[in-house]
Image 1 (cartoon, helix red, strand yellow):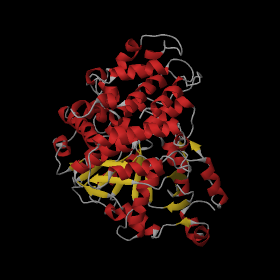
Image 2 (cartoon, one colour; image 1 turned 90 degrees about the vertical axis):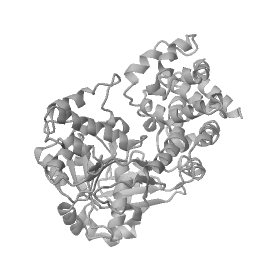
Image 3 (cartoon, helix red, strand yellow; image 1 turned 45 degrees about the vertical axis):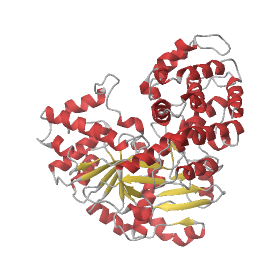
Image 4 (cartoon, one colour; image 1 turned 135 degrees about the horizontal axis):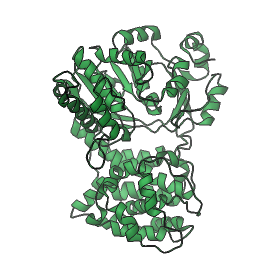
Length: 539
């Protein structure tokens, strides 16, 4: 069977018999309603969107509380749309890999259409028409944390952002520039309010999006490149809002064993693809059961009733608490720690690391011992219960097949958030001793050791993509396992850099501990395992 809307109608009984949960709405009516009255467009067509957000939209359709679906747009990688979206009529299969071994299969049909912002003038015009429609209520984003960067280290605009500011709305080409241009299109046409909702896994995501969009808009207005008043309109919360969100669902790249299972069930075209930008995609996504989405309820033009599908709408303050709980304490620090150590110790799966007593103890130390003392109780989610689920079910899930090499991507962008907040709180509170952050200091030293691109056996490996690798790796190029070096001189440029570490670790008093760990970790092959075990035994 081919995965298509026609095949879905013709083979419903067969698909149900083979264990597939199917859409329960009139897809043709949904497609027409979405074309006429779009309410939700999403930027970023990756696995998280397909595994989490598109199924939320489908639940609203299934239960009859909405009659429109969701539109998806990408910035540059049209190959994603051409390989796993359009050939399958924008249908996707979500394979939920449960910790008990069950695989739940769901066909998601809520994605009505797709657009590439730079592919053809006609696609761009179609997306402009969506933003010109007063019915549009929200434009959400999952475009990765680094996509929100618009300033260089010296405070000047990044070259591509400066080019967009100089070019004006009709000449913008960057992701942020094009989104701002679409807002200008809305300002020119209907002028109806809109919520721009970042759902990326980064701290205060709405404010990061707001800072970039408003900076570009002001640049255009100062140069008289847009209609007068546009920047004022964008900066007015009565017209454009930037809600904060916390999103959580692990979606590793498509797994070949899942592809085989779906193929054996009778579906065609389940093979894996590598896009032009090196990401993995397929007509299916595999994901975990757990999922959380908490959104600041700040929508000036109404919104889809996503609370019906389990989304928590609340205040900005509570979103901040939930996000801090998850990103700084209960999940992300554990994930990053396992990623770094997994690369050094030769692991290929996160769940396998959780079967290693030393690594599991490291994760528990960073979460329970070092993190929970400074976590803020958000009220809508219990931190300890959340952490328990992470440690006992989510990370050990043997069917999720997530890789430390994937999680290690962009580590330099993650470290200041995932560890920096806890470090600052320990430094600020008199009842806490920053020297007690033994697990976190060990991981920071291990990351510096990771930048040597040599694993614990002494064999070279290729670090995961990271924008700061060209800057950081040369700082450790002279370090050799088993050979003496000046640890302080080597690490000082890294540990003192607040952009990387979240604060100057020398000023807060954690740097000496990191330096000590690093000196031990470069003692020779096997030193990482030796020191990890020593830490695990230190109660």
